Picture 1: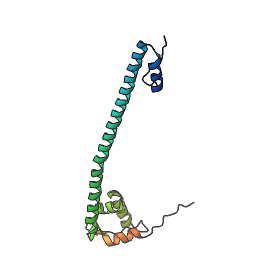
Picture 2: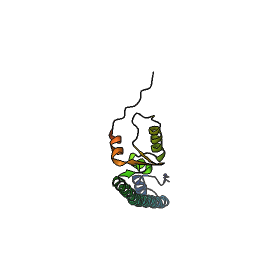
Picture 3: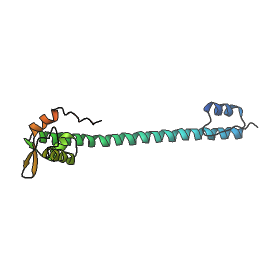
Picture 4: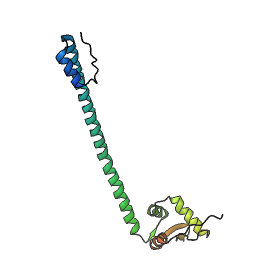
Length: 149
């Protein structure tokens, strides 16, 4: 009797060869292995389709959120650019930095520790920035200090 290895990963050619030249018991084993291979490929294709569906749905779910965030950002910028004076938080949004960094720039300007101080107006403790002057300041080149050495 001819004994062959009939693992689920066996090649289809090998199984077809055995199917034609083996005994009845081996033919049954070959047919069951063929069914197993078909089931394996069927389950792989199901898993692949499900994964594609999940990733497709996930991609679609994040796109509107990103679009909503971009739209919100555009609305905020339009609102800020329509003003004559802007707040610390609005300056931070325009400069893409934190509120605390803008406050640090103001402190340095108040103490005259900056070669290019940020232009601001102190309204009795309330700091505001004239938008036109701020935008000019942003465009000015600001040379870095060189380290002594």
